[in-house]
Length: 114
Length: 111
Image 1 (cartoon, each protein chain N blue to C red):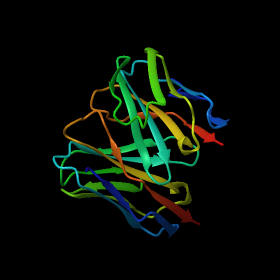
Image 2: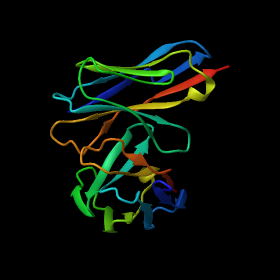
Image 3: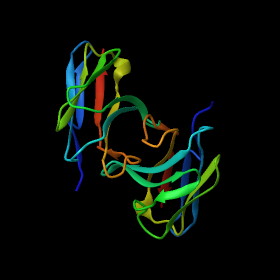
Image 4: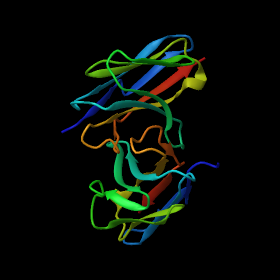
């Protein structure tokens, strides 16, 4: 398996534009997690899905953020409209078991909003 | 509020100079504590899970230990390839699907 695949690897956009980040989890993994990483706050869980259903979105910072998982092999995280403070590295991770043991992370998307 | 604090923020070691990284937490009734390694430009990579005080796990030059309030990652005779950021995360009892991460320790090992 190629692991968790995220795209794009880098994204530079202007404030106010819509941004869509994409993730393909490892086949057979039932859990998918979206994290945001910044120097100040470290890794923060934004939302996670189990069997394509959103379970907890309490980490999503604002209504500008939304996430979907239309099928077991694809998820998106959308920011609309984007703001400079959204600049961060966004990671997608997947795991097989409920207790989040050994989650596998993607390479991340570095988002810069100017 | 549940918190995970890692220290030091950064550590510079000479090759072969052993040391320890600390992870302290305020989560009561911890279900699990995880250590990850993160290389620049990459996602975190799983190293260990510890579940109970007194437990130890080893992998090559790394050994993780757990007490009731903190965990240590001991690095014995490190090599330059051990240079990375080491992240600690805890699994709270009220939601075992979640991990609460610390901000990491950035380790640099010089030849």
